[in-house]
Length: 246
Image (tube, rainbow, N blue to C red; front, side, top):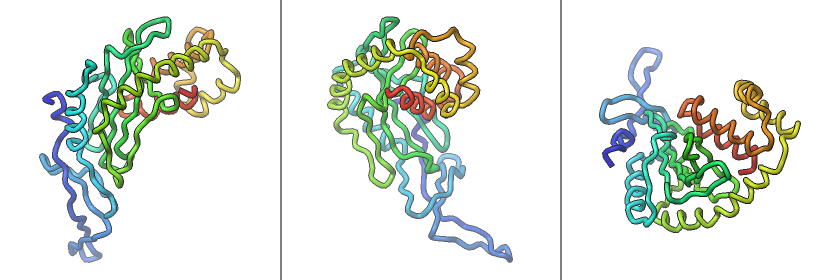
């Protein structure tokens, strides 16, 4: 838990004050300020209906559930980050792996939260390639949990989720096998620049011509995992997952 202390800084909801035309302080019930309680820093101003979920309230139950698992796990720094407004925590299961013919790929889960309304509490399942730390998110073939701040999050069935996710490995491998046997089409190339941007498209175009879509997919996961800022990786990983129906 010591490794996660930076993720669990105290936060609070405060009244929002503003000045009228004469500079007199007024406050409104329509909005609330989200602040860090350890240094008083303002994080965001949200509507009065926003329900704050402190990082600690989801990380501590997750750690408790992880301690009860039979499977080995690690807090993976490769795709974890925390800022005042957002966090992403990666937990990797080194023994729950599959192989795509090139290397072992270990299952991971990614826990998200924010204090600025950019996203609710979310838990995604994905994986990470052992030899190069390429992160992947499987939004199509694996079940994903999503809960907005207005409806909370359940982590008390994590053991069941891990087991069910591992049971889906044959489905993942089947999809990978399909990608390994499908060439890169013109429509896919056009979708790359449209959905992922010119910079990533240029990087891919500068690589050796991919023999199949799985190689192309790995070009993307390498770039996202090693070039894209950590705070932006999740969004790109989800776009790539959707693009390749993973």
